[in-house]
Amino acid sequence: MGNDVLPREVAELLPYLTEAERQELDGLLRNLPLWLPLPGPQLAAYTTQADIIGFGGAAGGGKTDLACGKALTQHQKVLILRRDSKQLQGIVDRLRELIGNDDGFNSQKGVWRLDDRQIELGSCLHVDDWQKYQGRPHDLLIFDEAANFLEIQVRALLGWLRSTDPNQKCQALLTFNPPTTAEGRWIVDFFAPWLDKKFPNPAAGGEIRYAASVDGKDVWVDDGREFVLEDGVPVYEFDRNSFKPEEVVKPLARTFIPSRVTDNPYLMGTGYVNTLQSLPEPLRSQMLNGDFSAGIEDDPWQVIPTVWVEAAMARWKPLDRLPEMDSLGVDVARGGKDETVLARRHGMWFDRPLVYPGSQTPDGPATAGLVMAALRNRAPIHIDVIGVGSAPFDFLMEARQQVIGVNVAEKSTARDKSGRLGFRNLRSQLWWRMREALDPANNTGIALPPDSRLLADLCAPTWKLSGAEIYVASREEIVAKIGRSPDYASAYCLALLDTPKIDSLRAVGGERENVLRYNPYA
Image (cartoon, rainbow, N blue to C red; front, side):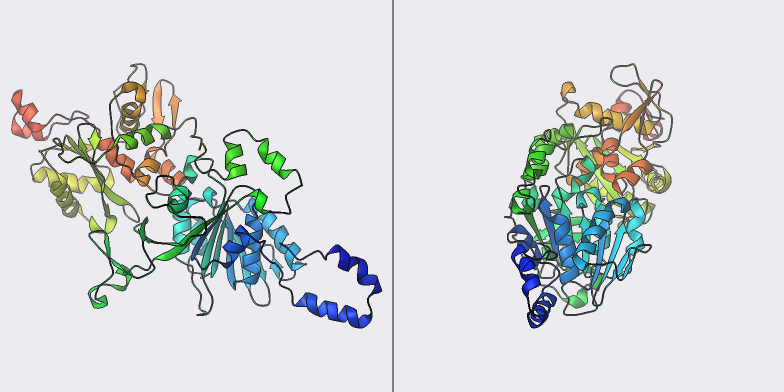
């Protein structure tokens, strides 16, 4: 609620006040804060002690006003971000209304310098634009319409949330409506206890939960105590001298506070509610009610529909006794934040991914060792040999394993299931085979492990038809879209390959050396 307008009763009395009364009134008004939160969700978000605050859900709940209010009254160094810089004007206008002037605002640099605080406005249109802000600490980091950002942008900038003032509370505020595209689904996972109906231990609005980001994934814990991970499990009783400082994990407090237009008295009676009610579904449910389960539309050219992947994950159940392993898919980390992912297939049941940071697979022998440890039943190994994958391929060959090097850039001679369309390259073929396996009409019974990264990866690429050839978006195009390499999906597409085992090939007269070098996709 802004205090930029005097109550009508006071305004009407102004001409009749004495000079002494005017001075007294001026003194009272000078002591008022620039902004006060509305009672209800906005006040709860303003006063919460959570480190990371999610706020919104429905349209008209006062998200932008909360962002401006916190920036002006609670914090010293503030960074307010929108995905596109063109969308910042509304925030600038509201700050100008609250402050009462443009004093201290450098529109070229997007910085507002006030007596006791600095507010910077910026954007992250491109994947790596977050790097513009690294190294500069802020005690309030605001992502306005956070679902429009890439997950990697948000997580990367959260690492710079800090202050040199020990008395200053550092917070991040993420305001958002339900995502309308698949790229925004990450926000539901980020605030899973509040937004994901499948979360095993749901949280109430405003309730504080604790989570730590470990290797880009959230580990939800009971409280804010520091811990170390041993075999992926948090351990609280540990000797600090036995661990590097970066191995000690400090969870941060998160909360999500839902708000609706009905919580904002300034929009009630303006016709805004009627506008939201007239929206078509599922947009009406998203914007009026803040319904995060309302339909998120796929791109019409998305290779694999989201509902197909979700159905395959719903079929997945842990098995007490595994059938023989039929294939092992390996996508080797290419450096940076990439991960080496191993996908194991037993019939059409796929096991949970084995994931290793790139630092654990620095060379061919290290990767080959992990692959052999995961191998069962002499299953064929399918490995992407472009770039860094060639070294572990060579080591696996020397170890006399049945390994098939897959160069996804090579030309494909295969046809789709209809027999009418070909593929631009082997990569397009592999992705399309996964689409055909997941298509409910084909009734393959494929079961994929429930994993948010795998879901996001499989739903990321789009395709186009060039003549009579299917072309699936390149790895580089997917990285530009979701901010990371689709390592999980790549491994599972490789695991879907159906190469006969050595024993089967030898049974029909193959020599061992020829069998080991057999590549049905060459």
